[in-house]
Amino acid sequence: MIDMPVFIWPPQGMNIEKGKLLRLKKALYGTKQAAHFWWQNLTRILEDIVFHPNKEDLSTYTYTSDEGTALLWIHVDDGVLTSSSDSLLKTILQKMSLVLNIKWDRRVSGFIGLTIEATATGLCISQPNLIEKLTSLSSINIMEK
Image (tube, rainbow, N blue to C red):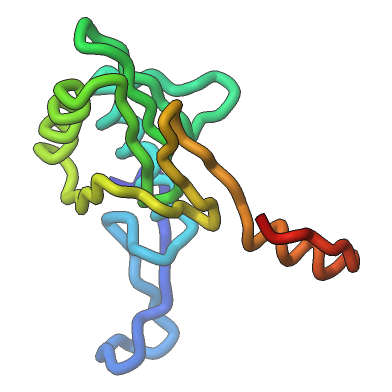
């Protein structure tokens, strides 16, 4: 439920008296309040699963148990989840799937403009498109690998 009154103009084609507004009972996609309520709801869900927000970056969450540690990075309604063990990853995915309608992809190659590559020692995260754009703006020549 919305904790403050939110009014909208009726959509075209809706038979409402001219000059009248509609009061929302729930957050409506596309409104400023919707993003705020989505974030509140997601935070509550993650805390119920026992994720802890990072103090420096509130879009990053940590989950720790006897099975290991997991990190979750959220941007709006997309996220990347990594874990120290497959069993912990499976446990978290099961818990999250009970309360969220989620599409999971085990192989992540990119996220919000970042390129993500698995290496023998971990992950390599880079922004080649941003680097290319910045170098073209500044006339810097970058040699190919």
